[in-house]
Image (cartoon, rainbow, N blue to C red; front, top):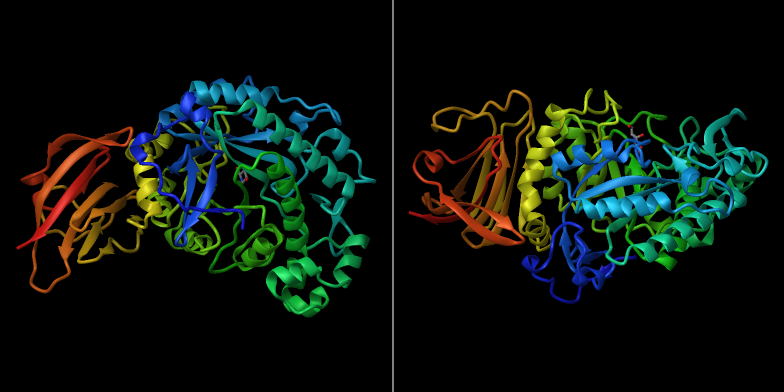
Length: 535
Ligand code: DGJ
């Protein structure tokens, strides 16, 4: 595995600057990394856990003339990290002539806006196709052919078995990492996505003559050993999953080589974004074959050890599917990270569920004012109304991103998003149970929760001490019950405040109407420190 085990104490969150402001301290800071401790993960930035509150731009927005239409939107949302593509066709317009000018523009502008960056390498794969390859690849069909389906027809993916394509993609990526290392001593860039939604649509595997020959041969030793399999052909070893497994191996192995070569130059965390499939009713052909779907995660892990994270792209707004996919990708061998999610308002509340799955980051897609909407995957119009729910949840977590990330790494955080089918959710902490209810007024305790008119609620509770909790939520009531028989909870103190650079600043105490009916959160950003006792 490529993660570092954390052997030393984590730097106090308060000692670390948020954002990407330049300082001598940061220039000397360690390279961002993903660390693991007791089965939990943290993205370490400047030596401390970091919660990435991200946004991704539209596909064609990473051009100098477009960036002025990006910054106002993402500033309004209050991100701390921008995900932005680096296009192979732009970076290497002619073979061997590299143009890092856009990379430098992005670094400068991100620093000026005090945000970090995640770079997305749009290489041989972009949504399974080769559309971002430069002309010297795109037009060289003899040496970089298309994938062939079972009927012998070309599909819209370039063949990863092509040595010419592979060498060229790797060379360009390594060049990018060299430029980045030289241009970014302050670590504005935190992670790199290697390719984009790799796989093929329209064919479960490559049936070209060379691929067919490999498919009829033995499963490579490397994979047999990594997965502790019996030696044999793909059919013998993987049975009904042979075609897809062969495809996964080819693509994951390809991406691993690119990532490993890039890491040899500059070892930033690297991840792939995954075309997910419906975890309950996956019909064949409804996902890009070769992608790290639920069934293929172990094979991906074995074939691509240089990839630190398999991050699901989540564009299904339904609670059951969304949270099931979070369960699937939250594994002891995989940090939870959502590199893309829909930007329609209903998705904003899922930041809570991602945090509750010990997430290191979350990023709605298509957040800019270039005039493009990917509805029905996201909002019809990217205006103030569409971005407001994201701005709200980011305004809660933004000032305490480091605090939450540190508590989460220590296993102290639980968080949930509203399930329209269940209007009460329960979180248990030792002798306390926190109850999150949706659709109640702020006043009174005689009504039954009916859920919000649109599911927009979410809540986080983090344990600060045996009877002390950090609580925040939107459109929800949070209350506590003592688990001991006959014991009734009372609030000793409910303190509203805010974190500034990791230090808590007192605002007021909540009492009377403000706490007699539980702790009621609306669209006003509020954070509480709550001390409990029983009577
Ligand atoms: C997922 C891809 O990764 C994105 O680049 C984009 O194409 C969205 N789908 C759809 O807008």
